[in-house]
Structure formats: C-alpha cells, structure tokens
Image (tube, rainbow, N blue to C red; front, side, top):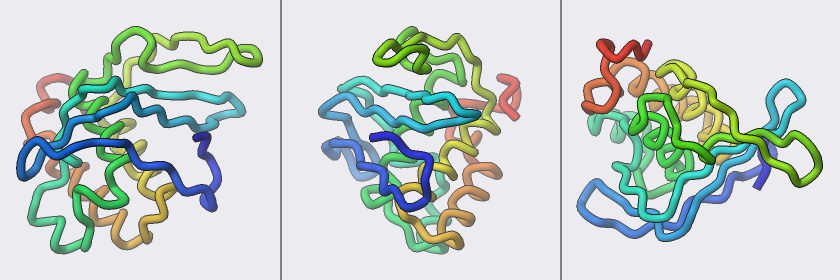
Length: 156
C-alpha cells in the first residue's frame, strides 16, 4: 500500500501476540511512501518480533492508544529501525528507480528519522493529532530507554 496522502489509511501488519507486550509478524510487512518525488519502501520480514512500539507504558494511558490497535504499522516499522539501529539489512529499504524496478538504498537512519517515520505512519493510519503527538514525544524522550538504540550508539 503506497502512502503519502493523509486520506490514505495504512494497512496494519498481520501479527500474533507472543506475550503480554510482544508480537510476531506472520507475513512480510511493507510500508511504501513518496518523499521528494521518489517512491520508497521498507519491508519487515515475516517472523520479526516487536513490542508494539517503544512508547513507555505510562504514555499509553495518556494518549489512549493501544499497542494492538492502529499504531501497529508505525510500531512495526519503528521497532525494525530501532532493532537495527538504523542500519537496515540488504533488501529492507528500497526506492523505485524504473517502473517495477526496486533498488536497494544503503541509507543509515538516525534515531530522529526513525521517530519521525513513526509519527508519519501514525498520521497515515488515521490516529488523531493529539494522540500521535503524545506517542511521538514519548518515543523521542524515552524510546532509547527500551534498550535497542541508546545515545551512545549515536542515535539522536
């Protein structure tokens, strides 16, 4: 599903719960968007385990979001970026070069860019502005405390 328009609702990934706060993808999940006129995509492989967003749990009650709700797409991509500290595996981040020809992009994502992508996908998933703002600020302020991407890793 290609996104880039606030009227588009992003499909949510197919996952199964593996614990009270953890999920596993049961099929590859791809998020597509357009930036600077170029179509791009990130693909997270089947079997990836994630925690439903690196939003501290106190923020869930403040923003009224649930890790198994509309935030799943944003959480999946965000956790994939955090898991790899911005250095995604080959074939995970691509751009469209020619019709139907995807090219791998050796981009290194910063923590800030990963958090911005989290906000973008929440917006495109239909999450109201105040709720996504609280979730975004919680991730920016406390996401590194989840142990995957720390300030020492250069993630800012």
